[in-house]
Length: 325
Image (cartoon, rainbow, N blue to C red; front, side, top):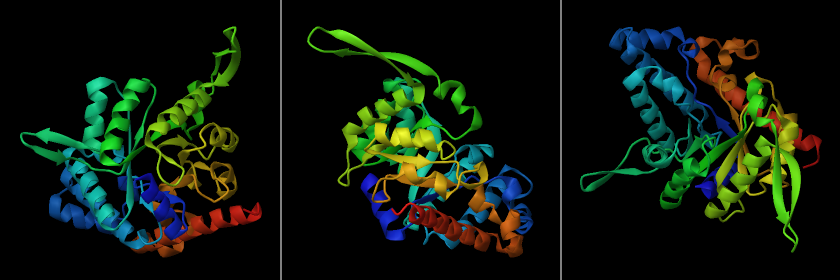
């Protein structure tokens, strides 16, 4: 699947993933009116509004981008109807030829982690049948519980030819409370068995584990199906982690609404402009609500989103041109 993602990026020329993170305040009143007239002001009505909103967005942008990233919490808040729309959105995006990254941030141990992996990437045994549940192409994984929380995902990825993005250095302001902590580590060196100590940040240590896990799922294009999440809001850390994880594809949140721009992204990529895919969520899906795209109006919200994608592509292109890469 990592090779397919790279091919889609090369085909579109857009190392971009659009986060399908719908909130009711993003949905134009005309769509809510239609949905509520059919389903009422209920969870079912909210889910229908989200579906109509998503579908129109996808129809307007699918030809410009390689991938989408639906955030499952935005659907779970509407209960079972919301989860049904999450699945409907995943299926529709795949019909449009998009790679789907399920932003689920799961991480547990043993059979629990294996169940998450089966639900989102694999298949589950039902009597004599193997059934798929959500069936994303990639998912995000929280590594905090260690290797036995990540390995079940890797095992399913190997069977199903899919992939994961492991949280390493996230884009939120408080990420440093834990991720930037310095940790003293020791390495055995020399024939005498001496130990050399060094201090590393926790995110570097997680990055080293991602590189190690990634050796199990190397693709044909030089990258592993075990990728990493590193926020665009921390470009210096991105530069460090690009070296720590030379074969890990990096999912880069934090562009746009969280403050990062094209110039912050360069160090996440390799010399071929590969190795990273940049996420923008509300900066694209709710573009019509920003002053920059207000001329489109709520009725043309999807056209505003299309323009925001085009502007993001241009911003990244300009950043690369500025450094001669």
